Amino acid sequence: MDEEQEYTYKSESSPRYHARDVAKYRCAYNKALLVLSSATPSVESYYHAKNNHYSFNVLSSRYGEAQLPEVTVADMNLELEKGNDTILSSVLFNALNENLKSHRQSIVLLNRRGYNTFVSCKACGYVVTCPNCSISLTYHSANNRLMCHYCGYSVPFTKECPECHENRVYYSGCGTQRAEQQLQELLPEARILRLDTDSTMARFAYEKKLQLFFDGEYDIIIGTQMVAKGLDFENVTLVGVLSADQALYSDDFRSYERAFDLLTQVVGRSGRGKYTGRAIIQTFTPENNIIKLAAQQNYQEFYDGEIAIRKAMLYPPFSDICVIGFVGVVESKVHKASNAFLSMLSLLAQSDYSDQPMRVLNPSPALIGKISNKYRYKLIIKCRNNRRFREMVSSLLIQFAGNREFSNVTVFADINPDMIM
Image 1 (cartoon, rainbow, N blue to C red):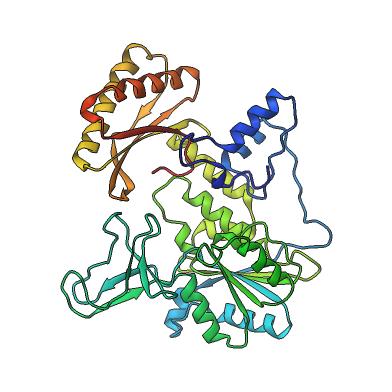
Image 2 (image 1 turned 30 degrees about the horizontal axis):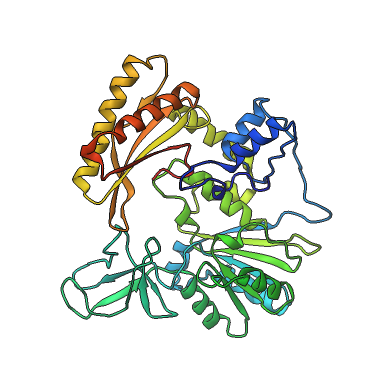
């Protein structure tokens, strides 16, 4: 399994399996060898390798004569002080210019789709949100519409505020569409290719666009995380990361791991052939240790810090996490259902399953509390994922499903989700 740490191996809908776990089972059953491969393995896999649960093989150098790129961290606070309010720091702008002159190619990462990331009113401060989801709408310049990336809701953009009716609605933040436009304005002679979900909706569009880039039809790729992994172009000698801070601060214990993986992987797209590579990471928090370690490509030190936090907080690999999700159209009913489930869990755990170690956190709204007009709550259990625990959860789900009071609330269990809802 290449890039074994990738979250896309985990199914987010029923059955909620992880392809890595399925591969481990199939290989054990068929007496086959499973190779988990990655430059940035998951913390759990690396822990198992370090503790002799897996055999461990390290490739300490790049293939052939390729060398790791030189990495520069650009402080965007200093750029603002100098009066530079564009998306490019002076160091990245100069590097892109040099690459153009020397007929080398570049990759620029911005992990946000759309033109602008949110729209707000300058008069009353109202942020335009989706009526179906608890998330702000994103402005897309291609069709001049505000869109929700969760349920697909969209409306035409207008300057009139739906709250105070003043004509002072403006968009803020930067997505890949706006970044593409600004890059074109700053580097008018550059041939720029945008790669994100919106630009690759047509069948085989992704493959065709990459082939054009490989053939030298474009000078710069600007894209979301789909440009960060798996690309191997000898002529790419520069990688730029815009707004590296976005990945660092999310409400999930894996946020630092994801940020480190993304930055390390995208930096690795540069200088993969005979030409020397360079990478520039733009950030407002250059002192952040994760950014420093990603710039150094220092996985070991990142792991040492991360595993200490995981152990102190009893997160995987020192426990398993089971998330019980509750979804329904009436928020009060969903909240009540989550508390009722907690009471049932408490009784059953103390009576029939007192041998099972677990820590249970009180129910709380999901990170995005409403999607497609359905409210979402979660209950988190730190546990040991064994047959007895799964038997208990199965019994609870069956018992809960028989309660007519909560017949309109959907409940599900997800063991070790990639992201806690």
